[in-house]
Length: 526
Image 1 (cartoon, rainbow, N blue to C red):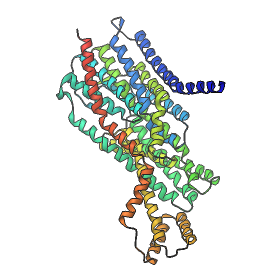
Image 2 (image 1 turned 180 degrees about the vertical axis):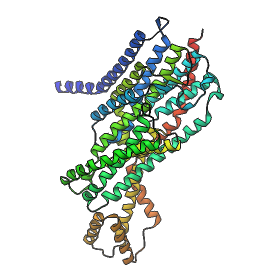
Image 3 (image 1 turned 60 degrees about the vertical axis):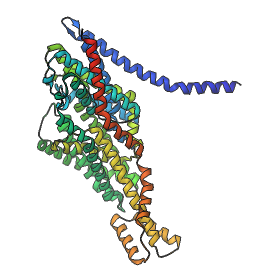
Image 4 (image 1 turned 90 degrees about the horizontal axis):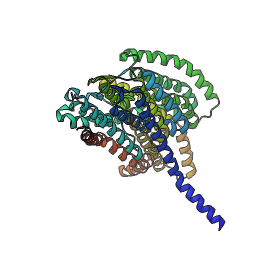
């Protein structure tokens, strides 16, 4: 009887454990919001008394910052966690430090009040209306990010706030206030971003396989090629960081950024090459050993992506708040607003808190639930994130870092599906064409085939086909083999869920912002 009572107590404790954790997270988040309220009351006054609108706007800005940390930062560290290059705790610590550092060191002194120029601010000349509009946009974007995080869908923070500004702007100034050509370009990025990210990530993974893991002497190939891949990564991230992460404090053109990145890459190549050679001496000639050589580059990429994200995307949290602060303190609706330190601190600390409290859910989704990532695949995703942004910025294409990273993950997953299906087809054809019925002879040939380089595999298969008079596998049989392996390597349910979330981000946040604007205006007007 006593044992049953103890079991019941344990069951109750297990059932309430999740609730206690959730209450703890909510409590910490509320403490942060209350802290913002108290600080804003003590530091910001208009005509000698605190501005109620500014206090509310600051609290909404803190809520938005936490949601950015919970949802958007997962794209930077998720692949490193999924590949086990970083633990969850280590990833959160690195991301929090570098996100906050990026925001505070390179976040800039001014920010555009209308993100991406999607509406004409001259259409909202009244200061109060502008403040209500930006508050509605900020709150709508934050609520949508909160919903997406709860659903486990990584979405674009930029698109969330763009939709909010568009919806609130139309509600405030009518349809003519919107820049529809800009919105068309943003809509195009729903396709451009993941496609570019996926293609570039898949291309790098294929090169790693082609030049390293498909070779008989994998370690020898790794000693030669890993320093080159790391150098390319250093060039990409240096250029990316200069163009995007440091643009507020050091604005240069692409050639200068690319040239500076190339010099850094060449220097690092000669530093990394002996280190890789030394590490390879202790390793065995297999994929797992080669995989381990990408651990440190992955950790650095997670840190640098987080720094660039903090510097570049913190404006999504503090931009509308800075614009509201400018109107309330100076009475002017401007296209660019100064960012006071206290506003930037709200963005930086809020992102770190949101990441620590709610980030693990999206980090797991991005890192391990879409497709299985090892360190080589995660490295390719990180490379795609940096290179795609560089290419897109030079072509003037609007892209989302979230869409790029998630597209890169799907890209490596689909490439693996293709390569697996192709390999299974080759093995099936070997068995189909083999002249002998002796199972041991077939297995010996398959063992030699697996160890052979890519070119040798093709030669062995071609030679076997020439000797055999048997028919090839039918097209239907090949399709059936490929279909089996496709369903195992990439989770289609995640693909459909994430794609649906991307498509509805702008319309959903826009509609919600319009409704919130009308509600705020109704409450504030006499």
